[in-house]
Length: 513
View 1 (cartoon, rainbow, N blue to C red):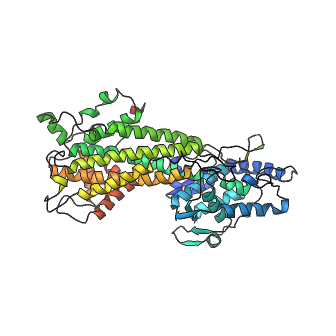
View 2 (cartoon, helix red, strand yellow):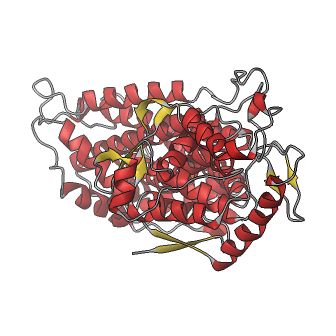
View 3 (cartoon, rainbow, N blue to C red):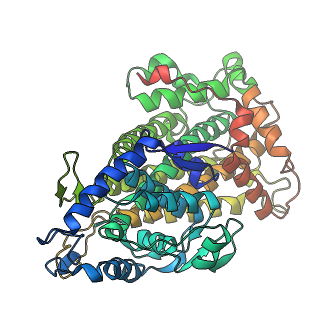
């Protein structure tokens, strides 16, 4: 099993996915343990200081002026976690919570939060045991950290609350820890605050989405090229010299993918022999590299933001490199919230274009001589008529999800926290949008494969490999069948990467210069 070392260098989105989704094991780098011990010594010194220090010897938020005596400080930390573990609603997916815990662990490993090494080791132990706190979808405003989600994670480390085991069983946290020989943590000065004051939930969702979108945008290029082929379109507009006249990096990459898919297509070869019968293809075909490429460039911008955040130490107050304990505003989620919203816009637009290509296949006036709705026996059969309805319903939802969350703000904590990012909400809706895009693209590939087979002129080698992979799960054209399982099968082939694997596409990143 893969093992990820925490604290030697910043994590990558791919490593976040390895731990969150694929249960890679984690270990703390020796230098991280040294840094944590050094900064903990700073906190221990301040704990004995008669002067108040926020998070060490005071209350929190609007109660920051309240001095807490030494004998009540463990209770202060317990109360903070218990009171902030106040989420509600639908249970958040396991991989999001694992990503959240992992990224909080990474910040602890920077040595800037002042926690003891034992606290970080407890987080690593829970991740390695597959123990995942139960967290509801509501509770974070994306400022002062993803408070409620992170508090539920800290509560589990304390042996309280509910968790799910590696096999998904719901149990009490104390029982789960005992089963794995993990001692519940008794938090000391500053530690409760350090465990909840971060952007880890929204950053985790960004990392997961970036990896998913890398695959889905190449899948979108594949789907678009198969639609061009199935609709008897032309590949001439994807020529490298034409694309270079507008040198957006993502556009060049997407056009390169589409050229690969369409290479040696008998349908395209027929144009060269007989002449292309249309003056121009519709925008949803002709402009696919421009739209998909813009989405690719948006992902690259978001990746830059994520890479900066993955190098960050987010806490308040924080132990500086020269040993000071300083308040700050680095917990504000605006940088992440903005790109989460930006990605949701791009996702909605790519899906919208995919749905338009699918619709062209179903309209006998626009599909180049194919049966209406790709029905086997039109009138008796409805073909893919309602598959497009499903796409349309998803696309409509994606447009609603593209409304930015980060433009909203609502004051909290007696107006001390009077501007918040809503980055957690932006992350949740992006996750839903990414899932919707996957389903829309799967339906387009399902439809384009059927259209290519019904056209009967053959398919490019790449398209044929994809069709062959699809046909291992979904039969070819014929009288109407129960369609939902076929859509589900196509979605799983996209989700698993099997269709991209069959296509054997190479991304020419040199075109990205």
